[in-house]
Figure 1 (cartoon, rainbow, N blue to C red):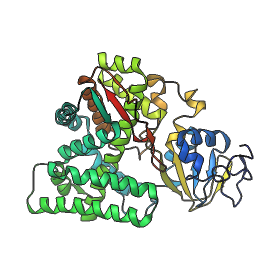
Figure 2: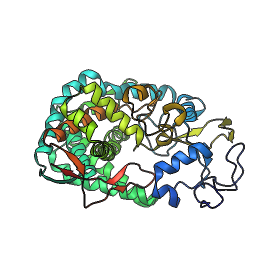
Figure 3: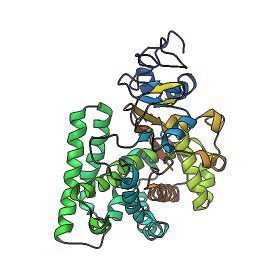
Length: 399
C-alpha cells in the first residue's frame, strides 16, 4: 500500500505479511471502504489477507483462510453474541440438535409445496408495477420478501407496512453502529414476533409458526426465547437480505442485456439458480460472519490469541483470484463448487433453499411483465454502507 493511502484503511506502518503488532492494519469504516467496499476488500486480500481492526478483531480476506475458519469448528466457535442465536450461534451437540430441527422446514419437499404460493406473491407484485416506468429494485425486493415470508409463516398481510418500516429502521441502525439504536430495533422486532406467537399459543393455527411452537428438541418443546430466536433468524435477517440480493441481481441483469435476454427467453430453474448465485458471488451482500478463537492459532502468518474475534469476509473470499481467476469473470458452472455466498460447513445458511426459490420466482415474475430492464437514466445507484453490502437503491427503467 502506498504511503499516501489513508492510515484509517490499511495502515502503512502495519506489516502486510508476518506478525502483527499492537496497531490496527485497517479500519472497516474508513473512507475508502465506504466509497467502494468491494475494491477495498480486493486490495486487502492482496496486501493484508489477515488484518487486525481498531477494535482488535481479525478479518480474513482470502478464500483459503475463510474456508479454514468456517470448517474448523473446534478452533473457531460460533458463540460470538451475548444474545441467544438459534441455531447458528451454537456449537457442538447443541447446534446439531437445533440445526436438525430447523432443517425440517427447508426440505426439498416442503420448498416444492411452498413454491406455488411464493410464485403467486411474486406475480401479484409484478402485476402492480407501472410498465413503462421505474422501480427501485431494493424496495421491490423488500416488499416481496415481507409478503413471501408472511405467506410462508402464516403471518397476516396487515403486518406488511410495519415489517417494511422495521426493515428500513434495522438498516439505518446497522449503518449507524449505535448499540442503543440496534438494541431498540431488535426489541421492536421481538415484540412483533411475541405478539404472533402469543396469539397462536392461545389459538393454534395451521401454519409454520404454530408448527414451530409445537416442535420438540431433546424431548421438550422450545422455550419462548428459543422460538423468538429462530423466527428472528428466519425473518429479521432474511427480509433485509432478500432486498439486498434483489438489488444486486437486477442491477447485474440491467447491465448485461444479453444475459437478461437469455434468461427471459427461457432457462431451466437450475440454470437460473446458478446465474443468481454467480451474480451474488461477484458482489456478495452477505458481507461477513463472526467467530471467536477457542485457542491460540496462526492464521495467514498472524498469531491469533484465544478469545480473539475473527471475521470471515465472504465478499472478499468470493473474489479471490487464486480460486476464480479475474474476479469479474462470469462462470456460473465453473465457479459453483467454490462459491461461498451462503457459507460452508455445518453452519451453512439453513434457509438457502427458500432464498433460492424467492430470488428465482421474483426474477421470472419481473421478466414476464417487461421486455427490457435497464438502469434508470436519471437516477444513480447508491451503494449500501458497511457492515452491509450490495446497494441501498437500484433505480431501474422498465419497458
